[in-house]
Image 1 (cartoon, rainbow, N blue to C red):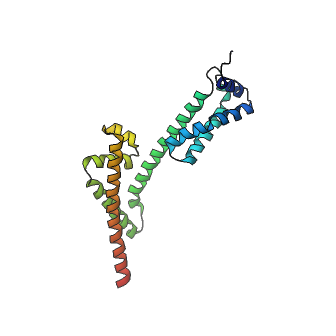
Image 2 (spheres, rainbow, N blue to C red):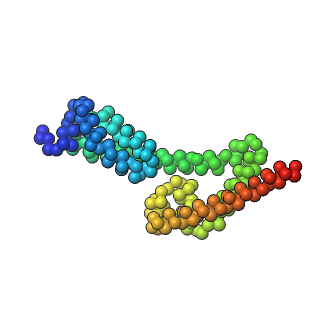
Length: 196
């Protein structure tokens, strides 16, 4: 077999269990993998964990490397799948959190908490229903279904900037509605404290 470049040499050395090759691979690709992961995960800790997982996977599967293919493509393919899995899991987590919040009102044993939660939910529902049809769709897709700006834009046939702007406006309207509710609750609590 004819070794053409350093990447192919690294793959051949890794395949043979060469620890120095692994250190060279780490030095050569760590920063580039980290930058790529950070761009998609928006978290330095998550990006560092993703890169660590990729290098562990390369070492564990080093005997499967094809030296003629090199190791670079394998590294970035592993990173791509790892990042996509993290994003998918994050979306599922957001959906689960929303579901828990929606069902939490049914699980409260404390009547006062249930009333407050139901009031909160009504305020949120009312605020969402008062949004324009497009803002409502965007807000629900982003907040309830956990889609990214890009996915919402693609699904609704809008530009990413339109989605970002409309979502920001919808969020602002919701925050305003919740702020009014919180002010009313604080006012009622103060009234009770002062007069009772």
